Length: 287
Length: 305
Image (tube, rainbow over all chains, first blue to last red; front, side, top):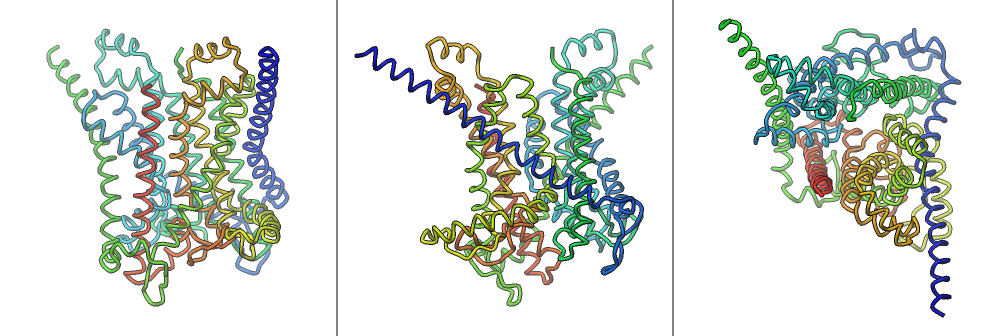
């Protein structure tokens, strides 16, 4: 009797296990499915509408066919460069501080501040930069957009820098100090140099993230139909163009929207995959 | 010799000062953000007080502003999305860490990271052209068969709360997976082997060892995903239908705080209108701050144990 019950219990357990395995496989499949659906849809539609004109022409006036997004490409590059010039140095130094300075109350506060900064919704950052820069300067500008993106990339870089520097073994540092190398040179040329791969991959990932950020640009760079290189003026940017083209009622604009999405997606996925495969292999890891 | 030693000492001091200044700058930046938001929402706080949170009408024409529809929209979409996310996130993490061979697990893990890398605006575009039409037909079926359930009792138009929830599921999954996955790495092998040695099936082991051990990671990851979902702007704006009325059913067009800001902030004129929008931004900031801090505390607790 008991043996039979045990048998039944065993069979039941086995059945339950099989069922659970099926559910886990199925839900995992559903989780990665959107990646293929989204990327596949954008690539198919974007590739169909892609043309050289897209890269070398500015947008055509409303009602005219053709046109490209040269202004958006240049605009995005300028805005990202502005963001990188501010965000990377501050972010890396902040990360070095967190990894190198001795524990103190202030360091604890900084760590909390970075985590809070990272959690601020990007649209709120857009509004803050509007209040901080657009209002006093009396106008939307590429500069303001750059500042907004810099604030977004800052905590990401601080955290990734700290994490990769923490992986550098203490022995290396102690060896440097034992050889009489001053502390700051040990920090820069031993610790930072050893963790550089991780630091760079963090920077690249944060760049690929801000390249697609749209919300913080709405109230800062505003977008523009024209080609412009002045950083104190509104400027076009690829994510804003995707937004405007895709919510427009015109099918021709939708197809430009697909082509721009395709362009941006390829750019972002390439940086991502390259960073995760090539640079992370080169970077220092704990043994 | 002495002189040289002195200059070396200075280099150290300069380096430390630069680091300290940068760190101070980051903290001050956060304080500035907070002060700016509070300062610019003062007119609206003065005019409406706490009632701002509970009033339903949003009428720029008559200068009457109430935040309830947008707070409701934000909470419904993000909480709905995160609840749907939980089983998917646990299963995918289990698959990566327990069920799949290591190369397949890595591959899936990378795919999830790539999903997180797709810009919100591109997911939104896919939402407009693919998800919304699909949702419209699903909602049509629900409406024609289950209209007696109040949640489904409205003629569906495709854009609305339900589409926003689905978009948010896609966008928040990677975040909760990455934290759940990290917590599953920490389960001691000895516990797992112990369960197997007692004759447990894999599912039994998962249920009695992994899930209890990773409880904090799962809850913390869910909270962080919730914080993410609340601030998500572009994709939600593109599929939620942008209505300023309080939604009654899941099919109604609505607005989250973030999507309202994206839609109206540039067109807003008049001190009170702008200030009400900024106060909404402040509210969004505070809600997501509280949720993020709670999530972090739970995740930290997991790292301690």
